[in-house]
Length: 353
Image (spheres, rainbow, N blue to C red):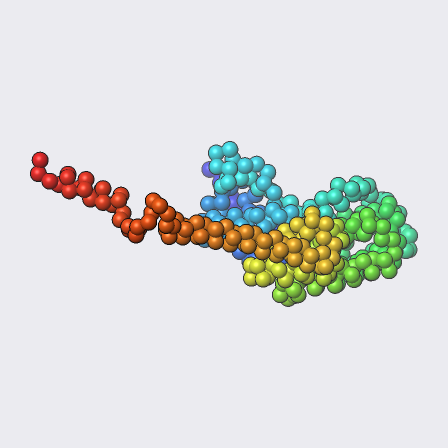
């Protein structure tokens, strides 16, 4: 007689990436995190529907759709394949945590592929006292023991890109102070600095200090200074200050107009304002005030034209009512002939035939 044994300790496991915990979780709505974890658990299953997720989490489908949109904008979630029958509700999702906070699409495209350092190569490089000390200090800052892959990243930054020890030590300190202990995040910041021509710790400090002050000012203007900006928010601020070249005064004006318009902090709304200003060639707050004055002048002119037209219509109607000429030298009658004719027809229909 054969027996079938089952391991009572065997359990399914869903691994959550450190990058998600370090860089994404704190800034996200708790309900969004629940949706992410559910999709992570079922991401390889076919035809995972919004309805299924909503039922499992006791959400509405609209709630689930908002959460999915949030994670897609954050670069964490992507739709691999959608059903041709119910495109909006059925999809096969994939969790992608390769996207890191400060890397723009242009930066990612321009990155030099990191050479694959073998364990032997890293070991030989580690014989260099300067590099060995760098790894030690970086591990202390990030409060973690490096994996072989982490060591390869530092080997690439130091040996291939030629980033000096002082710059790399400041990089580790900067990431740790901002609550980011992921080496992947550190690598992205390093590549961003390298692309911008930052070669010394002092240059990096000046760059990061300026940007950090700008970020703090925006978060404070939105009343969000109790938390760190989420990844999509960081990318938008990077665009405003670095790509558009707007100063803090101009960006804060857009934040103020956002609050006045919709009474809630919205990076997307502020981004639409600043993008419109960029297209209009705005560079300073003075330019914005000039645009406002021209817009107000156009609105006032249109209102005057409309009022003039309305007055002309009223005058014309009054003239028709009060006109006295050879054909209308008697008192006007107020008889409604249409109503009178309708009454006559009705009486004729009701009369005995």
